[in-house]
Amino acid sequence: MTEIPDIIIPDSMRPSDGRFGSGPSKVRSEAVAELARVADGYLGTSHRQDGVKFVVAELRNGLLEMFNAPDGYQIVMGNGGATLFWDAATFGLIENKTQHLVCGEFSSKFAKAVAAAPHLGDPDIIESAPGTAPSMRANPEVDAYCYPHNETSTGVALPVVRPEGGDGLVLVDATSGAGGLRFDAGNTDVYYFAPQKCFSSDGGLWIALCSPAAMERINTIAATDRWQPAGLDLKIALDNSLKDQTYNTPALATVFMTLQYTKWVNENGGLDFAASRSDRSSEILYGWANNSDYATPFVQDEAIRSHVVGTIDLDDRVDALTISKVLRKSGIIDTEGYRKLGRNQMRIAMFPGIEPTDIEALTNCIDYIVEKMS
Ligand SMILES: *Cc1c(COP(=O)(O)O)cnc(C)c1O
Image (cartoon, rainbow, N blue to C red; front, side):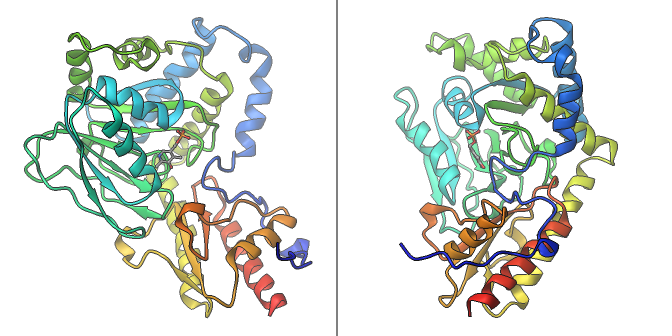
């Protein structure tokens, strides 16, 4: 193991908050304070009674507002995060054949879950190299098109569109994009996410914005004799959600903090407010990298360069992991690149809850370390 250089960042240079991880991500202190304020009457109370049900109802309505959802769309929720939603989808949302756009770790995982499901056909997989994005190709056999809004492992944001000429459902993994990237909800049938990224809450919950066609699919499959484990049964999740409940006990703190983020965004002008904060942060981060003589944005095509998760390659003179370790000693954390990508890279979350001025401070801190090391 190489020594970590003994460089301590001066207090005056440090960001106001040192959390730059892409998930779990910075939780806004305001949300935690609000949770503490209401805790005695909320935490530890029944999720089948009004106290919690009102919070769930407010969250479901707030999300429809934030996403500017077309008439008839509904918010469905369940336990287990985005990964469990993939499993639920293999049981209750996919008839037989999917198409997957695969461009990194997360998009590949859903494709693998479908490929492993014995009751489904082989998925049609369209793959592209890390740092790029593939496009859909209409296929009459496909009943569900699947892609991420933001591939968190590489920092690529995909356009939320329907396949031209295809008529399957469109299932968008928005775990790191939802609440931070603009999109047209009418182009999706299921826009699903877990709230530990942009939503500045905690993990363990999945939330899905569902179109009428998606709910019809859920009901149709539930009426067949396909076996579905109850905990992954989307019909059960849908029926409970419409009553502002979940099938089994949710993490009440997670639900509450997700609502706090939703209210913060809606009260400040909606998704555009949130997305503008990430736009500003990404301008700062990529602007810095473009002007730096040792850093470059990993994603070449600006049109798909993510505004919520930035990936920055460093040249050979500077070891990215060493920089992240030095930052960590000063309380600036989780800037490490995605391990499996295996690049000399830093990955920096720019979710709306992160202050753009903190992104600027971070870039100054990185420059400071590189200068001290050279
Ligand atoms: C983080 C992430 C997931 C996994 O979320 P879990 O809640 O941990 O299951 C899935 N997809 C994307 C795009 C992610 O960023």
